[in-house]
Amino acid sequence: MMPMSEIFGIAAASAVLVAVIAWIGDRRRFRRKLLDDVGFMPWTPIFFFALLAAVVLLGITAKAWLAS
Image (cartoon, rainbow, N blue to C red; front, side):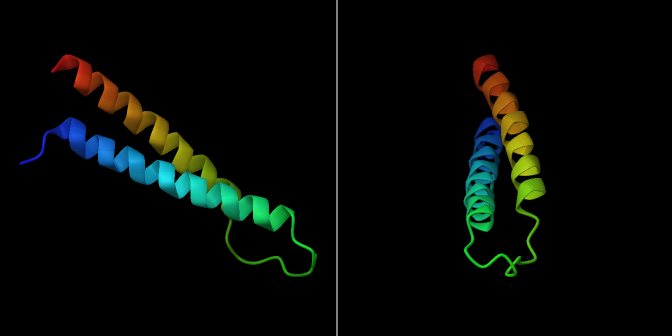
């Protein structure tokens, strides 16, 4: 079985990946050439919550890693 610090580390890395993808999507949406093509994904809230999750999970991972 994997230690909890590794599980939280993998979850944090996944949240960072989602945040990067959402950031790229948000940037593409703001730089679009056809202003009527808005899309349906709420990239800004996805980025915010993914980044928040990544920071919290990285903090938990660091605390668990330093405790061991």
